Length: 416
Image (cartoon, rainbow, N blue to C red; front, side, top):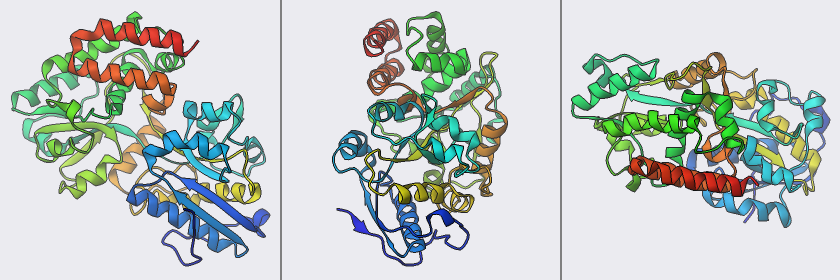
């Protein structure tokens, strides 16, 4: 059910800091449907809705929050039958089906008219067919989060090359530990490993060509990626039986020191902290270089879109301005909010060490390009088949030829 957002002071309400004169007299109802269903993101979404509601006495904001996983299969129906005005989704290729189906509104005029200042660096992630179809509101880095105290115990330093990574891993294994925690039960974590192995082995452009269906899964380039990945698998670098764990189930291996690192997004940090690890025990480094390519990074970007069937377009556009403004961006992405990176260049980055490291990495050392993540960059059907194959490879690496042949057949069928 939709619920009316109370016109009360909210934790993230920033009415005095914002100036939106073009939309000062908004009225009617603004319907927002969001998949920010986990507790912290849900609190942010509710505060955004209530803050915007309080700014406009004649406007009624209605918010519906749905389960994040369920939303992936519900969004098309929601946009087709009595659509809300604003919805959450994801950037880049994940927009494609809804853009092509005419379900997202073209908001290129907002970018062209200067209604969205500070978004130039992230505009590309919302661009398809030369037009813009929404706004980002948060993104976050991926990389290797590791037990700094164990590295110090073993005399290890952060690696910058894959050879150094392998050497560190061997020292960790020799100490009786595993190098990496991973829970691949729900498949997508294996996609993260492939993203980095492939971007580092063949470069960002080659990785995105594969995502677009322009490169064969049985090519020498892709085989080289799996050969590098297999070096770690054959060493016993990953925790045993990872296919039986989801990503959260695997966290105790790092907390207990049974595994020293986790390739994951920055959303892992609050979980590790709440489990008792201190920042003195944790640190972060960029996935090391393999081939001689500029570094590409996974930085998934969450977005807001106006439904093409929106009934209150004026209020919807004003909400997009509100949520991307520097003040709101600073607040919702800070350590008391999402704990992620603001997308507005004029926003402030919190002094959280991991957010600072992620911001520095993405702004200074991601010249190769920014990917959205395997299951966002690849078409949904290809991503599903791909991640099944990637998990199978991690468990049964001798099956590689069969896996690649299956994926190549899927590529030829899906992209046709």
